[in-house]
Image (cartoon, rainbow, N blue to C red):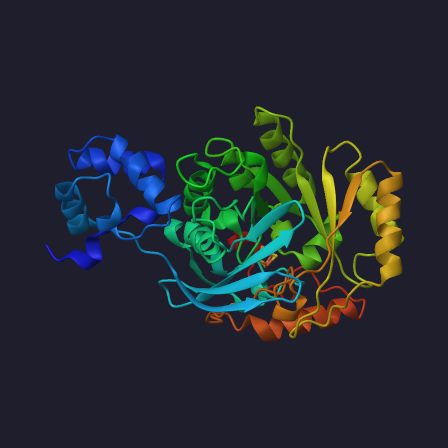
Length: 389
Ligand code: SF4
């Protein structure tokens, strides 16, 4: 047998898949726990360094398995302490991973796809079109690398990463199987041991995937809502044409009800000047969510080339927030971090092939919207809503 093509990548195996792997090799399943710890707790990628495994078994493993992580090809350090890594995946595309340190936590924002097919008009990733899904090892590998770079594998060091958000490039629920395995590895006590409250899957609203989520994970959920009604949401998020707001909220409520503990989802709302940041939008949002337990996170839009959308003014952010607070919601306003390294929300671009020539259409659509005229139902949609899974 020639090895390279068929070696199993141990970095991408969840505990149950790792146990099956060892059972298939006629080895004891507890070997899986040892290997998980070596890779994800000690940062070891050379099988021969796994010294509590016999030399005979290490040699056997070397024949059939490997530990392969994506490549880090560049890194940037922001003056505010944020860091961004450019990660090259097997398809040759590049995605971005961002670390945001705060006083009481360290949050890692992870990508799940190279590019994205959903074409939200306020998102730099969306303008590139879709290139490829990341494998489990490429998703977990971003956490591995960040942990390595931040000294998290050194014994005695405090864990630098307490929270993971699947809010980087791509729609996580359109890479369902790989994202499920990856978040479950992140939460496994034999790996990174992150709390289910601190691993968040952020979705634009792929309803069928939200409905099956409870059978695979109990991670936390964030919803990219960004508009208080279907008309506006469909204009800035084509996915809404397939899965309107009431279906989305219903599916999210079902998932939250299925969790053993009491948790509420986070509603993400990007404020774009003149598009969705009026007082009336805030009042409509308060009405829409009146009976929907949640926290609301307001994200001032970060301008990027290829979009004519603008940052909201401080007064519109403050008015919007005030209306929601008065209506009784818990509201946070996301501070822009990593602006000097283009690591802020919605700015992640990476480097993928634009297979859809979406960039020019994207620019046209944001121009139309910022001129105050909405596109018609079938106008300027790079991906017809019915093609969305
Ligand atoms: S906001 Fe998320 S779902 Fe929308 S285009 Fe960007 S990456 Fe895709």
